Image 1 (spheres, rainbow, N blue to C red):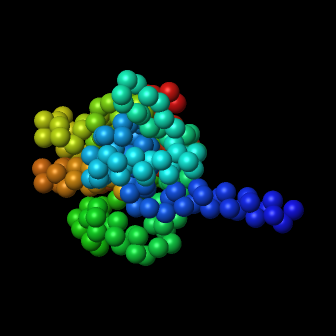
Image 2: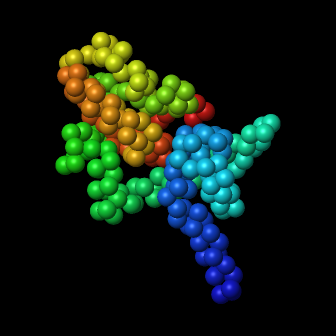
Length: 222
C-alpha cells in the first residue's frame, strides 16, 4: 500500500516537473490561445525549433499536450481545459503569495506604483457592465475574439485603436482586456487611450481567467 501511495506522488511529480521551466510555461501560455505549430511556438518564445520540440515533448510525456500531424507540420494543443485551469491557478497563487512575482508582473505591465495604468477586478467590471456604464474593449487579434470573448465587448485589436478612437464615447469609462493577467496588450492600450484623453483602465486579468472562473463567454464553442 505504501508503495502504491508513493507511486501516486511520483506521477504527480512528473506533471509538476513539466511546469518547472520558464520556457515550458511560456509554451503553455501560448497554447491556451489555441493550437499552434512547433515552428510558430519556437518563434514566439525565441528559441530554436529543436529546443521548442524538446520542451513540448516533456509536456507531451506528462500528458499535458496533444498533437496532430498535417502534412509535414506537427500541431500542438492543450490536452484539455483543465490544463489551462491549472496554469491559471498557478499564476493566481504566484501573484497572490509571491511578492517577487507580483512586483515583477507590476513592473512589466506598468501598473500600480510601478506605472501609470490603473486596474479593475472582474467583480468591479461585472458591476459596471450591469449598470451599462462602461465600454469593454477586447484588444486581442480578431480571430482570438471570435474564438471567445466577454459578452458585450468590442473587438478592437491593439493595432487598430487609433482608427477606432472617433467611435469611443468621451463621457464613458473604457476597460481594456487581453489574453490574461500576464498580457501586456491591455496595458499598452490603456496608455494609448490615456494619451488621447480617454478614461481607461485594464482588467486585472484576462479572458483566460474569465473562462476559468466560469463566467459567460460569447463566441467559439462555449
